[in-house]
Length: 276
Image (cartoon, rainbow, N blue to C red):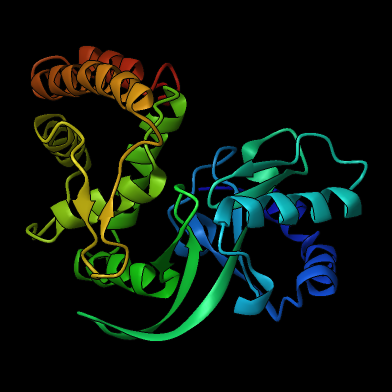
């Protein structure tokens, strides 16, 4: 789990970010979303995410241009902060040495309530990566994960964190949002979670499906892609094949040779697995 101090370093700038966006775009609300708020973040790797609710009339038809203008406004406010970039659908502001000390601001416009399998939730338009806008509902997706985490006695979110840790430790260019949906979808059919077994099964599922896009279980965001580009997907598939093989080897050794099992889990997590 991320440390509270990491979160505080990024979130301490919230008021200044809101003031900037309110002045330049009439932003009405800045609220936290993402892994930190949902309990699926990874220490040193998961950034702090905020949605910036901006009146539709203050946004441009081009989401890419909107992101550029938001980045320019934030750069003017945080003139002494290097490395502010557009990271669609957000603008990323690095406030420390770790990614977890970065703040990502996603400009959005409120679109009212949307119906989902779990009821009505607030929905927003955010940049879709193709210069347009797409619907998003952080509250709905958080409720989806929470429902199955509760059903599985609090063991789903740690499973998601294990898979995300593999992603970050091995620099695998797969969307965290995609992994969160995939692992939760997998867990829909499970009655219990045993971590070494289910990590292996999740890796096999991801490998067998070839990182195919997943249809949003909340019927909001359409099909969610695993990677930002074809070249990144090729890289991810290669690393996924390696990770899948290592999780299989770790599982095979769990009853025969615990030292070898630990060796393969350490390989799986790129030498970040705790020593015995």
